[in-house]
Amino acid sequence: MSKVDVLLGLQWGDEGKGKIVDVLTPDYDVIARFQGGPNAGHTLEFNGIKHVLHIIPSGIFHKAKINVIGNGVLIEPAIFRDEIVALRQKDVEPTDNLYVSKKAHLILPSHRLLDAANEQAKGNAKIGSTLKGIGPAYTDKIARTGIRVGDILEFDFREKYQLLKFQHIQLAKTLNFDVDSFRINNMTLDEYEAVWMDSLDTLRKFKLINSEYFINRCLKEGKRVLAEGAQGSMLDIDFGSYPFVTSSSTITAGVCSGLGVAPSSIGKVMGITKAYCTRVGAGPFPTELFDETGRTLCELGHEYGATTGRSRRCGWIDIPALRYACMLNGVSDLIVTKPDVMNDFDEIKMCTDYIINGEETDEIPFEFNEVEITPKLAVFKGWKQSIADAGKYEELPVQLRDYLSVIEEKTGVRIMMVSVSPDRKDVIFR
Ligand code: GDP
Ligand code: IMO
Ligand code: MG
Image 1 (cartoon, rainbow, N blue to C red):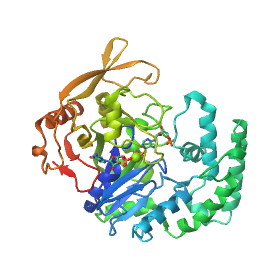
Image 2 (tube, rainbow, N blue to C red):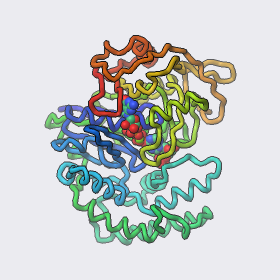
Image 3 (cartoon, rainbow, N blue to C red):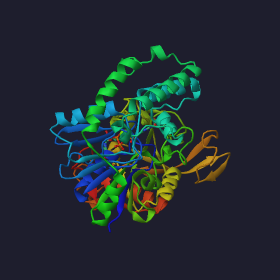
């Protein structure tokens, strides 16, 4: 009996999960997404190709590996079809090695309408959602009114769809949302609905399975399974900076419910952090930099959303948040990405604690969104050199190793890998 290893983001998303899953895939038989949906944007780069995945697991470029979209994921069929088309343009044919859970919930066009209506109604308090319909679709799942992938094979699918759509439109109207002016990809709701309905044919051609049986059978046969997280722990529905979060369980616990595996079946938990910190959308970000350094991180790190193209807010690494994430997830191995972005920095700072009302704390307060948090910053010397050619951990500049060792000391977790470029080949295993 083997176990499910987990790889997830420890910050506010975009830690480099796509790249690292792609790097680790040769060691696994199955790669499975367990939560989130098209709000995710996971970037892979190799052989001069850059590819962004949203719903499809990041193991898909390895032909011999099975990729599973688990029951905890949300599928927007038209976005799914676009992803399949984009893969085929790169000579990847996923029909045989991509399985989809029948229990995964669907995002309807009218979920996307409601997402926009909710954000508009929030005014200045808006979350900065990716507007892919995530919140409303998970709302329907929890309210027991959602539609699942398996339902598209049923005779009463259209009826269920129409009823839910009707309810969504009524709700949007009560929020004073102008339904007639709403557009998705420049299409009205009805025009987009036609595209969406048409895209169901693509979804039907895939193996639609009870993925919990499939995964547990794989474990029983000793196959190696890697669960790929989306978003990050600080966007978790329970423990993130609520309400500025996504609507799913982004932590290790989400693997159990999002794939149907028992807690005792969880193996290694690999947590990824950038060597600094970013956040897209609204919500607290104690180490955010509003100065030239912040802009430099954004430019050199190409910190623009892989899904929405929005520029990401940038700041120093946040140890209280990272420690919190390590605790919640039971992280056994740390992976640090993007230190190369700070190659030319004279100084690098690290927030070791928060100062709130004059008091130091290393805990995330309940009032995270309301209180003023001053980060207590430790200062490190920059390494001022390229790290592209370091083949081994020991070959990394001593200043960088000093910085990394403090991250290990503060989190109590050993760093197993450092990533030094967007490309698949540029990783240093410890
Ligand atoms: P994900 O959502 O966690 O998969 O991350 P994204 O793909 O949204 O954002 C990470 C970005 O950083 C992508 O553009 C990656 O190509 C890039 N990236 C990943 N690892 C590294 C690294 O070690 N160095 C640099 N410079 N870029 C990286
Ligand atoms: P990956 O998997 C970064 C953010 C949005 C918004 C909030 C809620 O690429 O790391 P939602 O659309 O889920 O209702 O948005 O969460 N967000 C992400 N930020 N990376 C992501 O995914 C994200 N998915 C959602 O910007 O603030
Ligand atoms: Mg991303």
